[in-house]
Image (cartoon, rainbow, N blue to C red; front, side):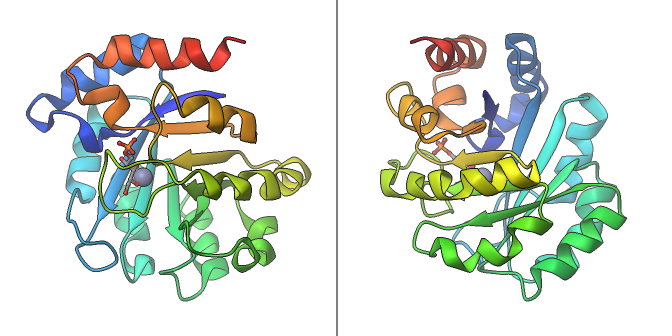
Length: 216
Ligand code: DX5
Ligand code: ZN
């Protein structure tokens, strides 16, 4: 179990220091939120920024593609240095094809599901994935409240995770209180954006969340 900092709430004028702070605090991965203004009502980073981050850090980079036509951007994001590419079940026209493309290009293939989408929609594809992301907010913005019912999908996915060996990650609304809910559901990786970066103390916040996760 570990916290995965999402840079969405970082200070982008000081990205290098923000990354160094969480790396020193013990982070092994970074979560990169890619939004296109179509699939979600917000626009964030593209391959250009991922490339800049890659030049600076050896941390595992997971790119969460909240975009329409994700198949067009798999290659640019892997060439930019993504280690894992995560595709939405709601935006991909052919997830198995997209997973194959991702793996052929040398990255890990992740699948992500939004809160309103039923677990049954992803069940047929769980044998093909390297990574499962369960959204616990509707994607688009940091700092939202966790939709706790979405954690039921973590419980449903757990037997498949054990059988096929992929980690389960959750994304959205994690803070010092809700991190325990994520832990109890059986989550392996826990994305945290605003809870890590929003008050300018990413090192302390990462440590505090991690300690809470491993306590009790
Ligand atoms: C939401 C993004 C999340 C976001 C989480 O669309 O996918 O990764 O950064 O932010 P917090 O942790 O603030 O809910
Ligand atoms: Zn995300």
